[in-house]
Image (tube, rainbow, N blue to C red; front, side):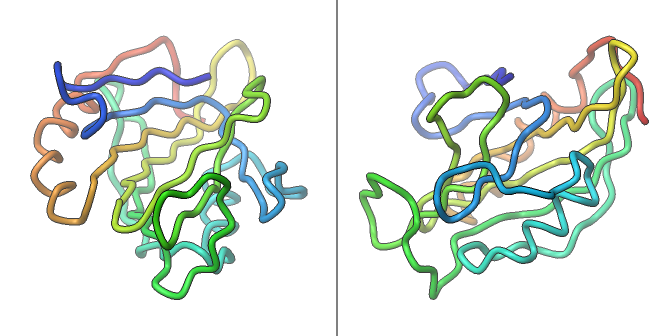
Length: 163
C-alpha cells in the first residue's frame, strides 16, 4: 500500500511517501527472496545492494505516536550498473515494491536521494514494516525540502503501535 503527498504544484519535484510492507526488489525486477519484513532485514539487504549507496542508519521517530524508526539516505551508487528499466539517465536503481503492486517498482535516478524511515509496527493483530520516503532531486534539494517533510512525518497519525 502506498499513500503519497506533495506540495501543491510540485508533485514531480517533492513527495513524501508512506508505504506498508515494502518488498525489496532484486536485479531481475522480482521480489528478493529471504529478506525478513523487518527494519533490520530491510537495512541489511539494502547494504548488500551494489547499485545504491546507503548512509549509516540513525534513530528517529515517526508520527504523533513517536514510532521508533531507523533512517537512511539512499543514492544511486556512482559506479552503479543500470538495472532499472526505462531509465532516462546514466544510472538508475529500482529496489522496492509493495504487495499487490503488480509490475510497479520504486527506484531513483541519479542524482536523486531518498530519505527512508523504517519502523516495525503492529496493526490488525500482525506485525508490519512501515516505510516513509522523502524524495529529493539531489542532496541539496532534499535538504531544502526536509523541514516541510519532517513536519508532515511528525504530524502523521494512524491506529498503529510499535512492535
